Image 1 (cartoon, rainbow, N blue to C red):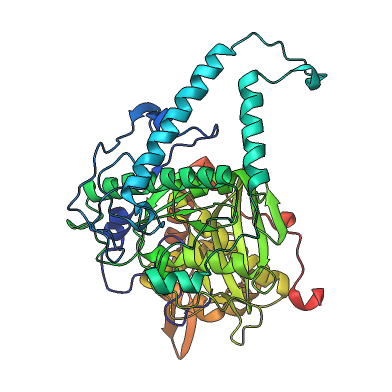
Image 2: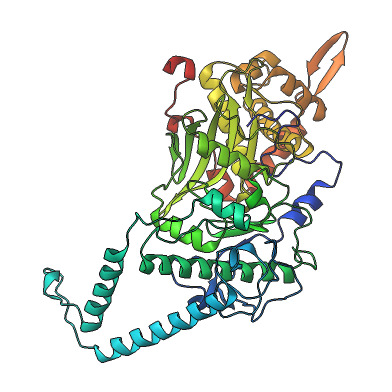
Length: 512
């Protein structure tokens, strides 16, 4: 995405305040831990023991037994924090758990909870009486008959839905809010009593999980003593198998900014308020890769070209996510003039995003990158340099030289300077000793802008001014030292190189 400040960095967020780079990255990535996957859709209480994927150890999840009543008062006007939507707690401190917001009373919530408990006991007793050995026939499922308790339950549900009539009068939302302030819309007569009870139970479970999460964040110090979020920013996100701390604020809608933790679908990047909503969304989400065209694939690495005009919602969600880790990103919703190149790593569950870069469709200054980000869980693995190399591959395919948008941040300059050094020294190492060194030739071969080549050669002290001319010094010791470092790199870094033969893409002007 275009940044009207400093261009973003491939290996970390932008930082132009002169702080120590290694210390900054180390501090902000120390809380990154893989989140435990739940492929079976089990409840939280059924996953008290979950496998810690980072160490291969069993780790017991910590659950709060009671709420810190003084941590935060309920935000609903006129509510004294008494009662809970779940019905089995005495206090609450969030809007989601407030009985008054849901047009109920604490006594009604407690009565609903007791009725649900009695219903569960009755169902368990009926299931025990009806327990028989049933031999399932996979070829003819119609032979399996319902038990008496199942038949009774089904008839009760059908009777409840038949009695429901959508034509009954109910107050309009404006009238309701004028009388009672900002509350949940009236849900009476919207659905049958049975379906409405199911919805209320799901709401109660979600509110309980949200308050458990708030307590955990309070105990870990991410919330202040009174339970508030003083920075008014999202501090933790959960995306895919990972839960990670954020670095900067992002202009998500106000109702989401107030949350200390945000849940994001790793495929469509839709953001949600609770783990329950995320789990239900993942059960229905059909996306398994970014939208757009897959223009590159080598092994498990793929790159998708996403048009900001055709996939506006996805592009905006991508920019909002990137702002959590980039300081100087300024554009989030005006995505139509940009193309987004999303790099993914595939496994049996889908294509997981490892990073992206964006560029303008028509850049007057021939910038080939406007914004670039490697996701924190994939940093220091060579993906940032792969995306930089891929951006220059597209520039070579277009027959022009490219450069990242200026000015570069401190960390962005380090990443690009490292890439430019590798490209230039690799070119010099393959050049004959008697051949002339011309910056124009290097630029045409690598698609790197001549100004970037000059600045890199000056940083390497390989460009000197002699007798009124600038000459390039081919220092053999620098080249040999670089070759020695290349041989010591891990094999996984060597395998992560862009192969131009795997690119299936043509420039935009040729497509049109």
